[in-house]
Structures are given as structure tokens and as C-alpha cells.
Image (cartoon, rainbow, N blue to C red):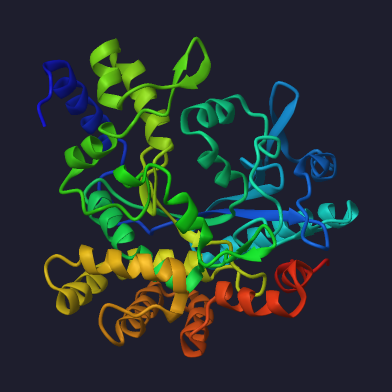
Length: 432
């Protein structure tokens, strides 16, 4: 690729600032945070409206309300908060960082009890499921945030998939010396996450032929550039990571305080605008926020975000978060196993597994027999070494492997017995 002097200078400045935002290795305990999206529905599976819940969630005055104009977009507390998602029927529970999953679960259960009670007061249910089960993605169903309208204009109707989905994202502390390597590993292991944690097989009231419709449908967004889901391969270093993002189409940019559709690639923007250093940085962060790979570094908070999992069932809410944390805790051993089993370039085989797992879940063939079982064993060992009892959250995944059925496959079975209402009954959080 031929770059201009302005583009080379911009990339060098961005790389230094992005890499420098991560802390140097300190030997401190890895902390963990979580962003947990939940569909809110009627008992028969129709989408609810989370705007009906804000007055109830705000009772007590302990949550700070944030608005965009008259629209409530979030409520933030010391240990947890709630955030509106792209679709009117999905709410995100955001947890402040904890030293371990046990403390994170404590915060989560408090937040969920409050949310479930608020929904019940409006005759609604909160699902541990990865998709609106009945609602179709429409512009009318999209939350009226200004930036969402700009992205819809830039991407077209494919953006509306984001109005339906509910992911389970975990954040883990990483250092400057390791974030590239661990981001690569998180992306390489995304088929493991999909195989074990897919839970979005039913939407618009029907089984749509995929265990993870989240990954399958949204993987069509910028597919040629691998903008969503598992990327085509690893980034060699921080500069390569920044370049991979900079060559992507620029969806949106900020002009006079408004988010507007972009044109060309981010590098085209750099060449045309020649922004100053701070404007360049702000533009890159906005651009990079709308690239949705399965693992991505979050420079603002010094974490890796693992985001390939669908929302998990109510009785196993920390299965995906534990798996993501285990990937980082057992990184050395997992890398060694992958190399031993699949050779020095495992990406083609792992990408093939990813495609198969999106469709078939745990019925997909593994790259080599027994690989998933070995990976889970190393994950259990990695969490056990942390000494906080976090390995217990992986028991749910062991049971899924033994049954050869993940929640998405279970949902397909249940749909045949009683329709969407059966899914609501199965995946709704119980009212306290």
C-alpha cells in the first residue's frame, strides 16, 4: 500500500497514542468488567419499549440520568448502570470493574433484580437471550439517537440488525506489552465462544437457520473488510493494528458537534482534512468504535473487550464472561495448544470452524477431534490459578459440550413445541 506523507505521519501519531494509552506491565491483578445486553419483551415475545422503564429505574435517586435532548440514554450508579441500546427493546446493564467474577456477579444480580422488577411493573419480561425473538429490525424500532440515524444513512438497512441483538461483552485488564497478542488470541478463539455461547437462533418468530444469528447476520456488515466478527488474521504489532482500522471505510465523522456519514476510508479522511493531532485522535476513536471484531482493545480504559457471545440464559449468566476471562488467564497454554494441534498458521482452520459454529453451534465439526474439550480444560486451569473460585462458572459450558447442545440449539427445539411464548418462558429472568 502506498501512503502519502500525511497518512504516514498520522498513522505514526495514532499508533503511539493508542499503544501508549495502555498501562505498562505492572504485575497487578487483572480486573474484569461486563456489558450485558438484554431484550425486553411481552409474555408472547413482542418487543417492549425500555423508555417505559426509566421512571421506575430512576426511583430512589441513586442513579445519574444522562439524556440526549429529551431522550434518556443511560442511568449510571457507583457499581452498575443501565444504557439504552440501538433498538428500543434492548437495555444494557453495565457493571463497574471488579477484582473477580464473584464480585461482578454480586453487582449484576442487584442490577438485574431492579431491572426485572421495573419490567414486571409494566407487564414485561427481561430475557437472557441474544436476539429479539419476534420483532423485525426497522427504522421505527431504532432508538432516535442522532448518531444512529447517521450510521443508518451510511450503512443502509443492514445497520438495523443492531436494533435486535443482545450480546454479552466482558472486559479484562491488559498491558501495553500484551494487548496486541491477546487481541489476536481473542479473535482466533471466537469460534470457541460461538460454539459454546450462541443463543440467537430464533428471530421474527422463526428459526432462521443459524445458531448465532447475531454473528451470521451482522457479519454481513462490511464483510469484505471483516468489519464484524472474526477478522481475516492477526495484527503483527500496534502499527499493523492501527493500519487495519485506518483502511476501513469511514462510517461516520463529527462535524460541528454532530455525527454525520463519512466518505471513503479513514485514510482518505486524513489526506483530505489534514486534522490536528487532537482532532485526528478523536476522529479515530469514533471510527474505531464502529468496527466490531470479536475481540478489540479499548484504549480509553486499558482493556480487551471480548464480544462474540450472545446473552446467556438466566441460570448461567456468567458462562460467557468466565470463558472470556479464561482466554486471557490461560493465554500461554491456549496458544501452545492451538499451535500443537493446528500448526503455525491456524487462522484458516479456525475461520472455517467459526463459519460452521455460527450455523450449527456445537454440532459443528471441530478442526481436530477433542480440541474443544482440551481448550476448556486449559480455561478451567487458568481460572483456577487465579484462586477466586471462578472456574465454577465454566461448568455450564462443560454440560453443553456433554449434551452437544448450546442454548441456541435448545431454543430451536423449544420453538417447535410452543412458539415464541415458550422461548420467553424458558429465557425470561424470574420475577423476584
